[in-house]
Image (cartoon, rainbow, N blue to C red; front, side):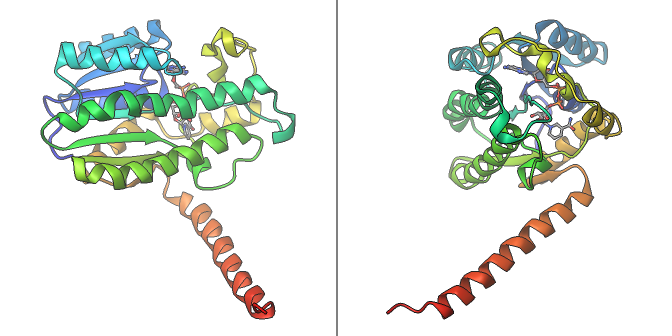
Length: 278
Ligand SMILES: NC(=O)c1ccc[n+]([C@@H]2O[C@H](COP(=O)([O-])OP(=O)(O)OC[C@H]3O[C@@H](n4cnc5c(N)ncnc54)[C@H](O)[C@@H]3O)[C@@H](O)[C@H]2O)c1
């Protein structure tokens, strides 16, 4: 999507971290930004930041888990702003530190609801409307390096980030005929509020538990600045990249995974040879 200026960008989870970084970067490019976030106060604060730099931002409280609220968001964007050419399905949460079999139901439900159903709700509400808009359109779905490799002690998170990657590649194929492209954003560590994701956990998923993780906190705090990631995403949208890796050394993870797959193909070859059809 080459033309950004004057167009509308909707960023979910734009009240904090990577979403805020993207919102700022798009506003710098003279886009009108809509922040859809469950944390209304922080969304307003980012909107004030954007307005202070001469940009335009509409902050809206939306719980992405609720399909009706996401549908209401799309309705408002189309009725008030004429539609959005760029959608960033970015909000995401995680639990930490447990092996898959020990993770309670509500933890699974919460992470799947926000990270996967939140993205699905976004696509359902926005894609039919985006299709009707003239010009190039783009969707950025935030996956993770955990979407291309194993996510140890973050089972539900890993499951959703692999799912978001698959969904993004599918949308890139399906959307081409309708002028809609798609990138999967795969960050490694970025200095955001994700270790305290629990702060905005909805009551139906048990509410905030105060859970965090010191080791993960240090790793996240040593990460890239979200503003830098926002500018990378902006350029990657212009360049129409299928994958946006924030850290080039993620390649080692991808290479190692690919190598394991290649070895498995060789094993399958040997197995068929040793076990011919009767
Ligand atoms: N920070 C990292 O190192 C890192 C690495 C890889 C991927 N990611 C991904 O980046 C994305 C953004 O996370 P972040 O690191 O900026 O964290 P963050 O906690 O700083 O921001 C997440 C935002 O999502 C919002 N949110 C949570 N639940 C919501 C809901 N139900 N409805 C609407 N908004 C909701 C939060 O209020 C918050 O503003 C996530 O998808 C995350 O998985 C982050």
